[in-house]
Length: 562
Ligand code: NOJ
Image 1 (cartoon, helix red, strand yellow):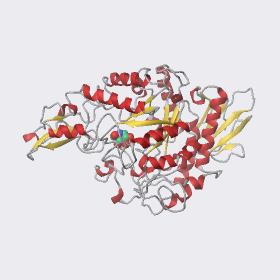
Image 2 (cartoon, helix red, strand yellow):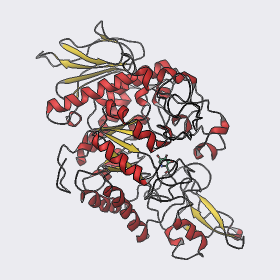
Image 3 (tube, helix red, strand yellow):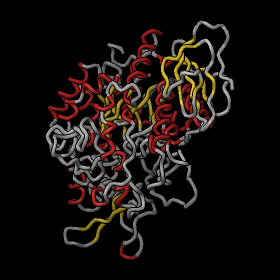
Image 4 (cartoon, protein in one colour):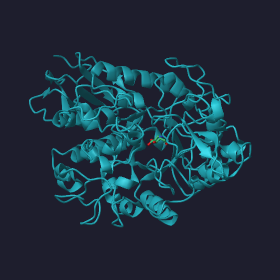
């Protein structure tokens, strides 16, 4: 931390922080309407403080018609009544701070809600007006302009354009939306868009937030010609993704963040497969960090995971930025389910519905992944419920599904509701303490979650919650002992057999992960086991198991042998 605005110290908090993602709708319901809210979060701050995380990232809590879970923002300076009030958000930020928890808010710059005053004004204004210039309005192609202006496809399926109707009911121009029609894209070539977002950043930074998560951070700027895409070919430059003119915007945002004391963080949501392209945003005067989704997409395979770690470290080191590690979030299949499938990789296009998953196997691997991830250098994001080992709920009744990704795919994509089911806190039946008894949560919870509640796992030696608490406490202790952030110390690979990852980290610690499906491996001698994801009493690490060890004074460099 620094007292002086703009002076980053090498031990800035965000360089090795563990950041817990809260999806407010599904975290805890304080007012009994079945939907989570800020009152619920305030009642559950104990859980977060005792877990041992450093910061809380809230997905959008702003006024919104909730066409896309709040990522369709109608007012960037308020709180939706469903969640509470702005005053409550301010109190929450302060209460969390008093418990040592920083707050990160989610800003959505690519698009607004159809209910945003700017878009309403644009609809009421004629083609060519200043109001419409804030968005991408264009006449259609073909006879009577009945075809969209280009062939871009929305991230949620279907055309990325919707036609508006004039006051007299006649069809008019089309507007661009890379996501749902309820989320019109802003025109970042217009200086008013830039000025407004800079003011929004300041609004939340003034309220003491420690950071901003930038939604869809690679998509803001567009080629003004809005050219067609050629099927099967990735154009360079791309007309709307990862364009060079984005960097200037983030340089400006960085100056704003750095003008505040206390190391404020900008973290970008960037689905970029090329680590070098990602690192271009992290070169010191733009974003501080970005989500590393390649890790989340990697299958449970030692070589693939190691290759991902190496590529990530190399590209980040080149620009002096800390890497981040993400296994799960509100957009992807929950880790336990993914790791229990035959294909353990993730990608949106191939997202599978009801592909069988061995949840016991998935849980075993998720436990090992917990120790692997928490030992890596850099910062880490933990999605609510990961610490409980929650699985994807794949049998939600069709009439309860809300996600536009599901609805707009005509039901072929399972959507993201299954990873957004309300948290189980206590009790033996729904709503499991998520809401007052008798309340119907907005999505139904599986009866099987009775054994996964916070209360059921609290203090249970073999529970996922206990593993996370222990690992987070050890990580923190290692930080304090080393005098530098444990996560910031370099990772040192150690020779290990095929299918096994072994590396030194922190202050004399060793992490060994056996990703093989059947073969146990002996642990190196002369070491004390500090923590393991499954019993290692006989000195061997079983399949899909990880352990943290401390060197016992042996002069020999450690190695794992079969
Ligand atoms: C990324 C968010 O994580 C996702 O939930 C949302 O649907 C899109 N951006 C659009 O805002």
